[in-house]
Length: 62
Image (cartoon, rainbow, N blue to C red; front, side, top):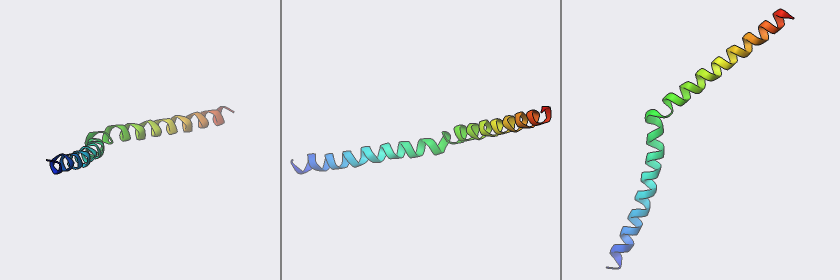
C-alpha cells in the first residue's frame, strides 16, 4: 500500500512535467511558430521597407 502511492506520486510528477513540456513543445511547432514567426518576419520586412523608403524620400527631398 505504501509503495503504490509513492510509485503513483513519482509517476504523476514526471508524467505531469512531461505532459507540460510536451504541450509547450508540441503546441508551438504545430501551429504557433508558423503564424507568429511569419507575421513577425512580415512586420519586420514591412518596417525595414518603410524605414528604407522613408530614409530614401528624406534624402531625396533634402
